[in-house]
Length: 220
Ligand SMILES: [Ca+2]
Ligand SMILES: [Ca+2]
Figure 1 (cartoon, rainbow, N blue to C red):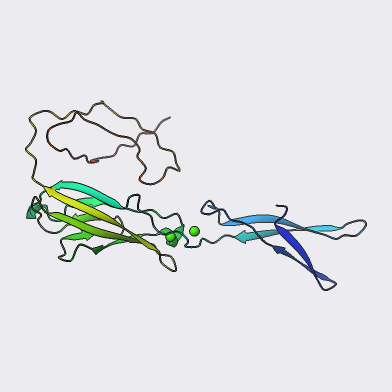
Figure 2 (figure 1 turned 120 degrees about the vertical axis):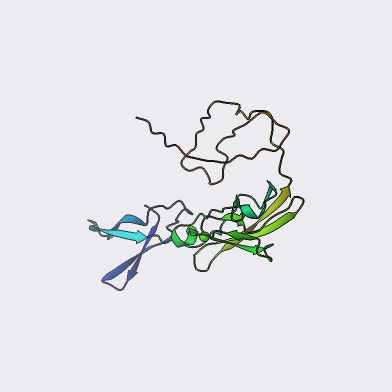
């Protein structure tokens, strides 16, 4: 790595080489260390040299705060009676570009839950309901994601929930536009990036989509 080292004479018999300016690309360093060959050479007429192996450990700094893909989430849900207590509402999760504890997030509701109608799973960020909700009511929650770095960093997002009347069941059958969907993702795609869209003929009543199962397909 030429240009990253500097040699300085200290006294007659000792010299110190300062390794400096090793710029570590932000968050691209997935290895925990860098190994360098450091060579020392004298300036005599027939130069002598010696090489030593230096390992530099790169420690992650908590220089990124958690990020929510959106600042505001707006959802509509059918009114809920008491029996639906504990049902999930929405998952508002964030990501953090750091590593280890610096990207280990926990979630809390910091505003809009004064009467305790909601709770959030601190690890999965799933918001669920504790009480009943009638059509026409509206809730706005502020959700905070905090990392586990030192010092901790955090950010917030808003979740707007509009409670609507339970839709009348549709007389028409529900059919997806395609018999199956085939989407591709790249391994470095960002969290919350759109992978694909599944669609259905527009119906008069609102529709909610859910992932109800998972199949693992392996090739070869
Ligand atoms: Ca970092
Ligand atoms: Ca962080």
